[in-house]
Amino acid sequence: MPAEKQEMSPQSARESATARDVLRAAILDGAYLPGERLVEASLCERLGVSRFIVRTALQDLAAEGLVEVQRNKGAHVRKISLAEAVEITEVRMVLEGLVAAKAAARVTEDQAIELDEIGLLMRRAVTAGEFRRYSDLNQRLHALIRAIAGHRTADTLIETMRGQLVRRQFALSLLPGRPAISLPQHERIIEAIRARDAAEAELAMREHIASVIEALHNLDEIGLA
Amino acid sequence: MPAEKQEMSPQSARESATARDVLRAAILDGAYLPGERLVEASLCERLGVSRFIVRTALQDLAAEGLVEVQRNKGAHVRKISLAEAVEITEVRMVLEGLVAAKAAARVTEDQAIELDEIGLLMRRAVTAGEFRRYSDLNQRLHALIRAIAGHRTADTLIETMRGQLVRRQFALSLLPGRPAISLPQHERIIEAIRARDAAEAELAMREHIASVIEALHNLDEIGLA
DNA sequence: GTTAGCGAAATTGTTGACAATCGGCTCCCG
DNA sequence: CGGGAGCCGATTGTCAACAATTTCGCTAAC
Image (cartoon, rainbow over all chains, first blue to last red; front, side, top):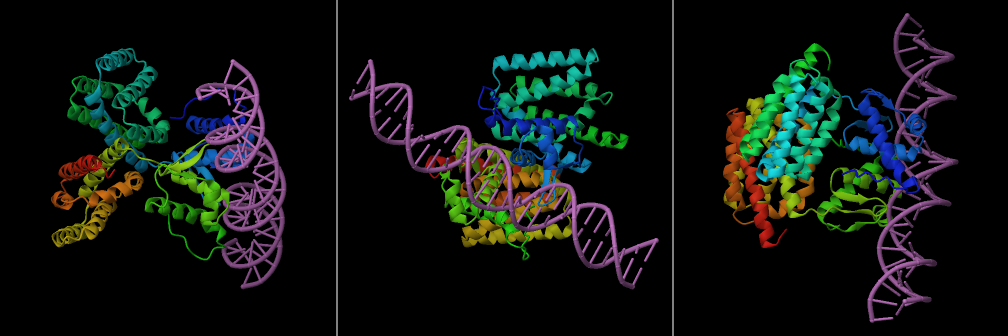
């Protein structure tokens, strides 16, 4: 939804949007750690914009759940506990389940082919041990399913939930043995959508994300949380 | 989550919070109709606060999905189409399903009794034809289930979805024959949670809200959308 | 040595003024 | 008579200064 207006507008029109995007990217990149205070004046200097712009950016990111603002106390990067990460993923589980079911009901022949292609690339990436590539394909697959479903409300929420967990999710994809577990799950989801079996698609997606929740717990035990 | 800080603080500290609440109440009451423009200057006068306060209130309500703001074009009350209302309710369906399952897994004996009490009151309200009362109990039941589940993430989202549809939801409860349909559904949900049957609780909740979606379509055909 | 109280620095909240933008209107030209 | 260029009022976006609040170090008393 945040369209990429670049053009050559008198720059004042862009700043608030880009400041938000730059700050979001910085947080997701780990330039600001969870719990770290976000002092407005510092951000002004860092981003080269006025305090007003910084404030609106912070409010926007607060709405996305990336930062938390306390009255008269300022903003800080939201720190997400394991319990919260699990809750967020549970929500994502049922939402993506809904979306998978919708996708199965609406998928076209072209889209089915596209799904298959991603599935094939995934399998290749796993056998080749290209985990980074597999992670990208994973994201592409989920995005495609959401596009097929055409469910704006669920799509927006899923994207918000995902944003809150990108750091963790990344660590997750590096867990050894994880691709071997998730690849057949992904293939099952693709198969169900191609067969236009909504119930099976939802079930497959939910079991897939349920196993992600399991992996989250494991990640915590190892101490990489 | 929006705690009720009243105290006797020098009022400036409260205004932004209450302005938001007043404006939200006004929108939900229908004082501002869907699609109606919300001109900042007018709201300043109407609410007796500065433009800065009005702006933050508008941004907050935009995050809740009650108003929409377009750059340089101002804010207006969000107009929710039937299709969007269905999407929102579908999301609510899977989220409340999740919450019902969690509630079934965590319910205590005292809470089970409380559920039963509400169920009894509901049945009485329906037989007595007290629809307004039944509507209140309906809300109380769903709130209690969410409280039992203790799932903050889902709870917040459900509340947001509900806020976007209160107007419609109200019209829905006045549909003749609607209580007769939903009462047994509610009783089935209560029964499942009391039996600590998570799968059945989720299924019952989903079928209940699925029938709400059906009713939404009927409402549209009648023209009360 | 510890803690309560005080005060200054740091930080956020708010205001009013100014700049940029939008929407509609008129008026001119074809 | 139709259409578009340009102007004007209305409205929103932004800024820099000011007010309120919090935080933290310091002092002093116990």
